[in-house]
Image (tube, rainbow, N blue to C red; front, side, top):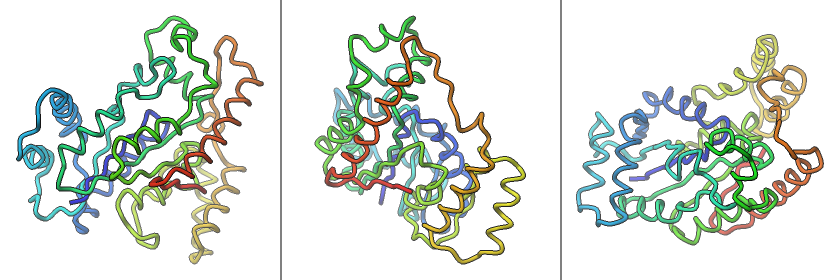
Length: 293
């Protein structure tokens, strides 16, 4: 069985992605793909992996866990999709002394030990530290951002460091990464990659994110355009999406106001430039697939 773990990493649109996968659960079932309700496994999975830090999992642990998640016969399942935005850590503890998800290696190693006979794939969304760090700070119980960073410099927070740590800890797990900022353009591809589908396989909710961030008029015109242009490559489709977003995007949905002391425009620009270089570094890490527009 293929076990897919969508990590989320507390990026803006990951909950929407999980919801879209759940909407496809019935259709996926016909392809041997299971998408259980998160409430049926998130706490159970967290407790099981936590217990593995001191105890070896029982031989039948994975079978018992999967059986608790599903109503279907396990033998009929070829691919199991799990979404868990808090698997690596709670949002308020995602950063520790400048290190993103400092227990990721142990948790993913234990997850692999839980499914020793299965092929595990990881999917991770990342986000510009210029917006990601303020979001983590807002979720924390820390009074000031300086205290939250605990002596670390925001300019030293790199996603590539996390990705390299994951690849070193669990080299046999395929890892697919994307940028949250690109999701409106690559939404459908992310869904298909998680499902293990070919690019031409229809999938429900292909434009679900667009409908959230584009005006009603814009979506109507976009769908009308698709009807008159039924045959387009993925590249052409992304160009069309970008053009419609440029004209019809809802400002309050796509722009985030940053109001932190010392969070100046030059600093934001510096963090953004470093993030773009970091994404390029991630694309060069062996064993990593980077989904880009």
